[in-house]
Length: 120
View: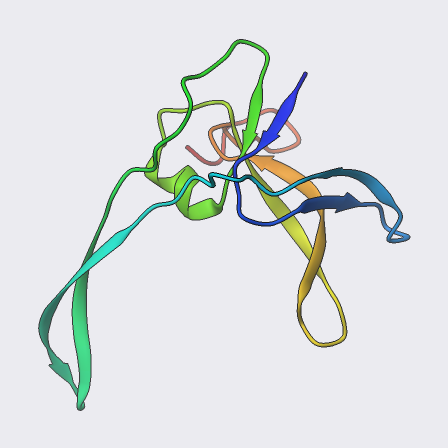
């Protein structure tokens, strides 16, 4: 199945030995969720804000095509079952993300070993 990266970063999946399994180039037009913040009050001198997020501009679903997005974009579109999020991030010695070990389908229910649904 084809996978399209809609993030602003190269997405590289590596195995446990840090060998590259697959990589997708960054998108020239990444999917983004914008946040509009409104001041509420202060808490111990720190501004407390309310935040309203927009929905991302995403391509229409295409049978058999997956789209890699950020977790924020995925959260803004819970109705979509074709969005993948990089997971189990791999970082270098400075803490910079260099890859991931898997992609997560956040719309999929999580089940325990006996097949019982535990999330969603």
